[in-house]
Length: 106
Image (cartoon, rainbow, N blue to C red):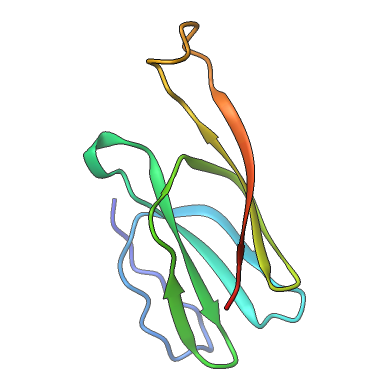
């Protein structure tokens, strides 16, 4: 389901998206990270929208495979834990591959 998203107090146009209920805000409130689902080809994935509240800009990551468990911003890094589900490799059909990852904020 597509949804409009507006951040009150910021004069930014945020594109419509399938927004996940997880987000992160840096301690200094300079950066906000929002997660948008990207289910291209019926494969779970997401993009992270990085909002710089000082510069009033939005950057978007490339598509990242998996689904997010949690996300945070520490210093100038976005840290997240994602999980993957690969039914062809996991014979038991269980979730596999909880992975911690991070991105630098430019």
